[in-house]
Image (tube, rainbow, N blue to C red):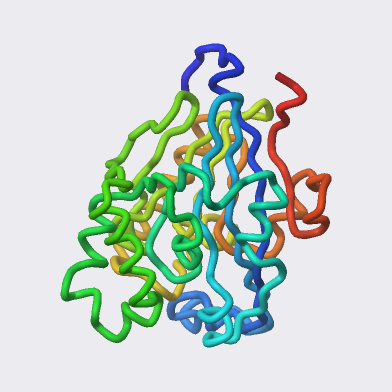
Length: 275
């Protein structure tokens, strides 16, 4: 981590928004769970998107699942993501900056509701989901065809910025490719007044994954997944203070509640009031 003293232009306030949830079993979310010798039991899976707000720019990190895709998969919507964005002062019709961590249905489901936004996405991720291999049954179950069409449309209309590991869309924000769950899975490293924060998205679904080396059930490379989990541990050892996972139900309890209309469905790291 850099020893440079951050200035306000380098600092951000991170809002974590829980927009959905579901109840399942541990054996349904951890790959080959029976090999760990652990008892099965209930598991709550929450669904999040994130807003990274600085003094000059705001980034929306993922856009959640839409209501139709959620109902089809029997997910419960806690708050509509687009409604949540509006409650945070974001106009979906404006020229927003959207970081797509990966192209699964629960991360790009409302991209069409932000039609004028610039989209940051890994080139590897885009190439994978627009290739023939992505149509295999065990891969396409995590996507919606019309949502993939939305990222293609963003690219064709010049609204897509393709990124690689280490790309910085603004001072204080670094995009990291941590593959495994998908080929171009991005995590977002953000500087805040409360320390460096890693929005891992689905590079780490649950804190237990990184603590016990237990991969999630859905992946495109087991070896890359193990390597990615080690990368996250190395980042923690080198100075990342806050790890924000993609689906852990304990996430909101780990951080300060957000004051505002979202109530129990949002938490905050850092504060613009401290700058």
